[in-house]
Length: 254
Ligand SMILES: [Fe+2]
Image (cartoon, rainbow, N blue to C red; front, side, top):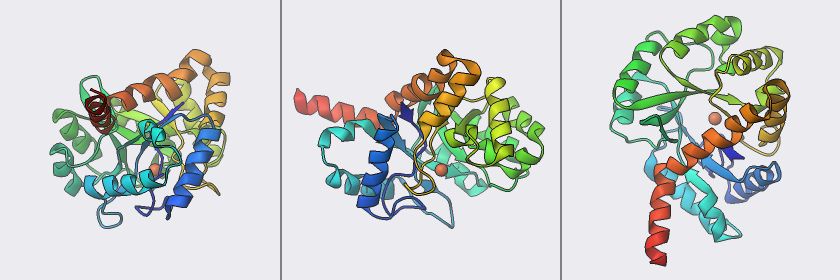
């Protein structure tokens, strides 16, 4: 499986603090059946001020600790970017890393505030789309405004957003309401990908397989595979940093 939302890099956000903790999380991901990972540290102005440079540095720090260097070919870089009016020009200028490409757009993993949908959200989403950026909303099933009133999701659907649902939500890890919303989204064919959003091995471990099995039971194997394999793989393979790494590998081989 391909996991496109995971806090794996050390010392950047509320994920692992040390390379050893990152490696433990990576091992847990592999045991769960995850073969490829797009790491997505938070970029949240005023809280986690990461950028391509700090994320690249943490990636290199992890790379030095990997038991096998070949594993590097299975990990690439993006970010989970907090929606904020100040952030928009940075996104439009491609100053943040994207998940990959889809339908001719750069796909941005976009985090809304957990408690509400900001006024003007639809306008900001439209602004991004006009600039070639397709927002993939991270874990809408955990947004309190949507939990309270699931119809709030519709305006995001109408803007053409993609949706990443957390695998654990489908099996009740975030409560009954989040499970219901996740399940409704699955049945309405609104989920683009399932992802782990893993942060640590204690209470936020990678459990993409549990979500996959629940999805398979609900909508069948073919659709479930699209959520953890086909679509996230297309993102991984079109990821800019994966492609750069592939390019330098083939240069070295040539
Ligand atoms: Fe996250």
